[in-house]
Length: 306
Image (cartoon, rainbow, N blue to C red; front, side, top):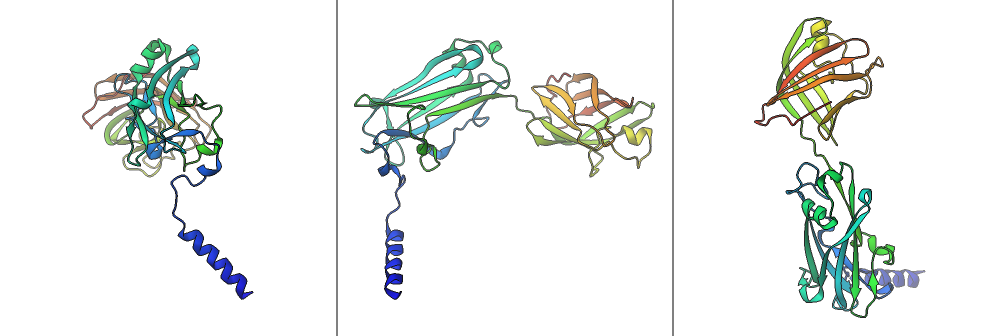
């Protein structure tokens, strides 16, 4: 028993003493090559997305380093194609040969890319009007070896997709509409269905992905009556609560969910005038109000519609 324990301990110590390799499993794989995404992420002003409202300013940045059994020296070229399914368009957007590779911080051959939204449209030969929010561009990458072999999304080992390798063989870039309606301490006035009005401060609390909660006068519970219940019922009136939310989908405002009593809400009209946003809303219990909210962050409201 003691001899076995000593043997196990020696094996454990030897294992711990072994020098850690960046890609420890590579020796067990077929000797091809892969492009490792440096930093593990594609970056840009909107992350791995294009802003639908900012064609010229939207971009993504990529750095890859090439790894093979000869420290990346067997890679001849790296090619990136881009496709847009709704228009059935596909084109090559970049190709870098080994003569133009740089050197990464790990001492491997590397390549860096910056693709703009406008560049992608031009490459595909499509117009801005042909792209809709929610569309995605699919980028397919391929490595060509000096012996003529090609490795791409269809024939690269799935194990290379693990974080340790971060093989960049295919990636998507979504077209999004960032929403920035959130704010605190915004002055508001609501004229309720009863004719009485209520003024105070309002918060549009950003829940992410264009979804907002509404709070008035520092209250702890959401108030989708925009203060109108306090004006038309009483200062202690029960609020709508429930699952109500305000949604901004590329500057189109709409309510979702229902109140605790099952009422749903909709907009009769939405008017933007600089820093003032006027919402004429109603629910299916015939309650409603005309609410004006004023931004105080120095910005105008975007061109919101219902």
